Amino acid sequence: MKSGFDCSKCPGYCCSHPRIEVTDKDIERLARHFELSKAAARKKFTYHYKTKEADEWILRHRKDHVYKSMCQFFDQDERRCTVYEARPAVCRKYPYGNKCGYYSFLKFERAHQDDEDFIPSA
Ligand code: SF4
Ligand code: SF4
Image 1 (spheres, protein in one colour):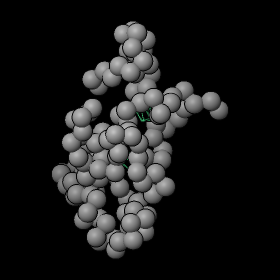
Image 2 (cartoon, protein in one colour):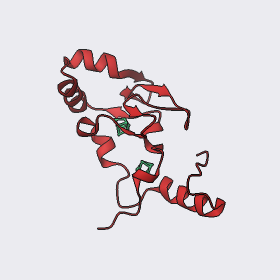
Image 3 (cartoon, helix red, strand yellow):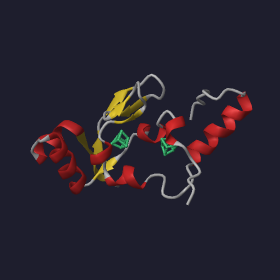
Image 4 (cartoon, protein in one colour):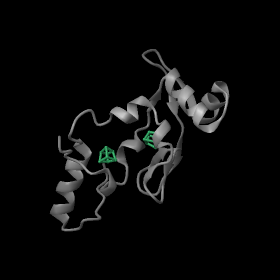
């Protein structure tokens, strides 16, 4: 099936999502990738987000020059994931089909502005 989006033309909006949840299995994969213990990987790459409604381990972020902040595994110059093989399940699944809403928005805005590098604020 032909994909309706092209991540190579996008500055990586999905990796700017503030709450990218990782499972135990995701931590294990990242720990293996970096040759760390699971506890060390959890501490280094995630923080615990606990509210009345949620109890999650979330990937840490860093400030970014395009979006407000990005997942710390995102290469901000190359605009790509640096742990692609070891990325969490949620990153593998996104955008859950052959369409990406942000990419459609980006394409529309770029055509509208007649500027193929235009980045609208989301
Ligand atoms: S926001 Fe969509 S087009 Fe952009 S990198 Fe993520 S999945 Fe790809
Ligand atoms: S792990 Fe990779 S794909 Fe997932 S949010 Fe971080 S940079 Fe993006």
